Length: 250
Image 1: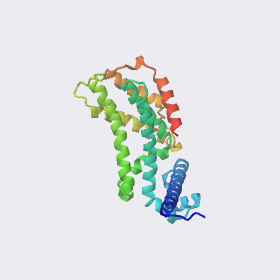
Image 2: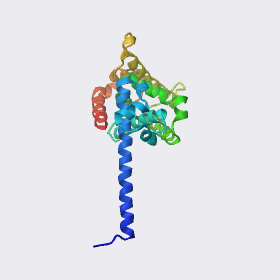
Image 3: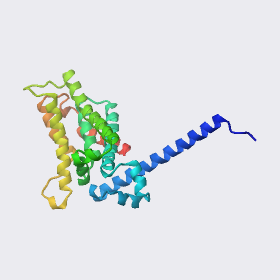
C-alpha cells in the first residue's frame, strides 16, 4: 500500500480549498440570484436578510459571511447588472459598426438590460445614495466605482473617437461633456418615465420605447451632423441585433 507523502498532502489540501472556494462561489451566486428575483417581484424593500435566509435555506449568519449587510448585498446586485452591461458593450465594440451606431447600440443595451421595471429604477437610485455607499463593504464599493467608471468611459471613448476622426465636428461651444450629458439624461430619463408608467397610480405618464428614445437621440445627432446620418443606416435592424446580443448574455 502506497503511503501519502508531502506532495500528496499538498495536493489534497489544494483540492479541498478548490472545492470550498467553488462551493462558496455557488452559494454567493445563489444569494444574488434570489435577491434579483425578489427585487423584480416585489421591489428592493423586500430584500432582507431574514427573507433571504428563508428562501435560500441558509442561516442569516451564513448570508452575512458573504455580505456585510443589506446595502452591501444590493450594491452587489447592481454590480452584477453593470458587469453584464459591460459584457454587452464589449460585444458591441467588436461589431462592424460606425462610431455613431456603436453609441446608439450601447444606449439600446442600457435600456434593454435595465428593463422596464420600477424596481430597477429604485435600485439605480438607492445604490448611489449615501445610505448605501456608507454601509457597503469597501471591496464592493470599490468594485462598483470601477465598473461604473468603465461604463462611463466606454461612452466617452466613442464620443472622443468620433471627434478625433472628424465624424463629429462640434460647433457653438458644444463639448464632449455636453454630448455625454445629453445621452445620459435621455437614457436615464426614459428609465424613470418607464418606471412611473409601470405604476398604475401614474397612468398618465407615457412609456418611452427603446426605438422612440433613439429617434430623439438620432435627431440630436443629425442636428450635430454626426456621420453617418440617420437615413444612412437602419436603426431598427441595429436594435434587433442588440436585442439578440443582450438576450444571449442574460
